[in-house]
Structure formats: structure tokens, C-alpha cells
Image (cartoon, rainbow, N blue to C red):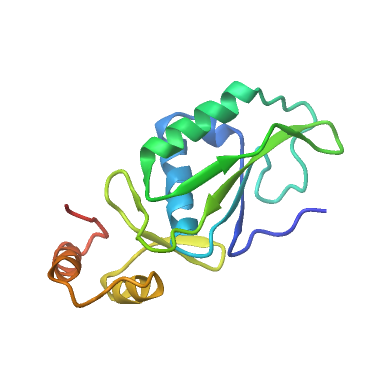
Length: 163
């Protein structure tokens, strides 16, 4: 039996990756928030409330590879790996994307946004979250570069990282 969604487990419909850029952008956000926390797993092909994939669902390995490729172009400083195509007891197919914790650097989306995990939700990082995130990642807060990063982030107030 599958676990409920929590700090390290997310379930996403296969339609999320078939729906185009918005679905991949949402998955990239999830990857970044998991990486900025403890890491985790995204089970692709299982609806949030369902315990198994739809019986008729077929997943081709090319879909797994394409999803991983597209996510890697939308996430920075995020380690990702995909499982093989898996078959549930009911015959429906799914796969799992493992997201590794970003231990020494802050993970961002390709548009520079930072997300954090709060329970089973992904939330945009606020300016007051930055020092805590940086401390957790063992970054030195004494360098001018880090302070400039925080100053730019705080002045924008949007969660965007400007290089």
C-alpha cells in the first residue's frame, strides 16, 4: 500500500507531463522544493488520492527519459534520477523520479525562483526564509556575494534570484 503525500513523497498525474510546459513547470517547482529540503520522490502516473495508477495506463520509457530531460532544463542545482517503468498490482504503469537533496547550494527553477517544502506543500521562499535555508546548507553568510544575493532577493520580494 502506498503512503500518503508527505514531506518527501508527491503523487502526480501522468497528465501533468502530457499537458505541456505548465505541467513540467509545476513538476520543476516540486523538484526544487524537495531538493531544498530532504529530497524525495515524485510518483508520476498516480493521482493524488488514488492508491494505484489507472488500470489502462501505459507508460513508455521514452516518456520517462523525455520527462527527466525536460525537468533538468527547468531545475538548477537539483539532482534527479528516474526509475524504470513500474507496473502496479492492477496492471497500470507509472514511474518514480527521485529528487536528491541539494546539500551545499540552493536549488532554483530555471527562472530563478526558490521554493521550500512545508508539510506536503511547495511554497515560494520568502526573504525571511533565506538565512535559514543558507544556514541549513552550510553557506557562509559573511561573504559579500551571499549578502548581495539576499539584498537583491529581499528588494525584489518575488522569490526571484538575480545573477
